[in-house]
Image (cartoon, rainbow over all chains, first blue to last red; front, top):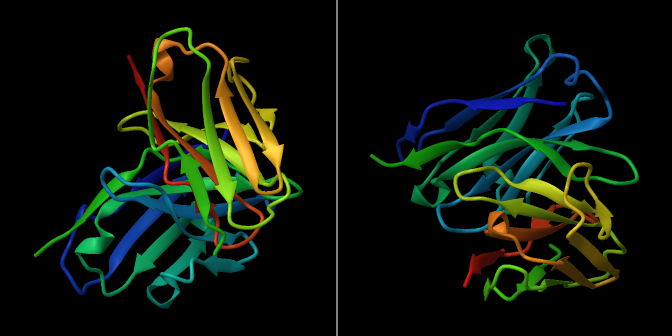
Length: 121
Length: 107
């Protein structure tokens, strides 16, 4: 069972950088079989995949956000992080981190509880 | 991007009813499709993977079918605890994309 927990500021000013961290339960993070993902959900709306990183360091991003997003990892702390620059009110959402067991099949099998980030001055 | 179109966007049904949700992909995604349930204020929960495989611990009243571009999610006998929003999601290609969701309510 993988456990994930998001942390970070709940309020970010417009044009600034959103920074979130996801802490993963020990024993799971070093497995090369998982990808570590960020997904967001504006209030009352659907789910948007932001991007992912493997413990190898390989990352992929949603083209709609790619110019503003960086996902990185800190294996010594069992954490991966999201940075999103130049935020606007449209980036206000609940942000989830999620794991996906990669291979012939892939699904977001474990999720954090989510953290609400509001972009406002 | 692969577009995932779910229908209906909302659905009202009675306890015991058979409920069906459809999901159409904008291109062939083989069977690379998952279904999630999201209760208010909670993260999504995986129910079905690879279009038709039931995740461990998920009640057998939930099922999925389909391949290619057209997929179906079924609740065999609706229970009060099934009130939630349901999403399909493809993993055939990047970026991963979700359907817009189907909000299920009890009559």
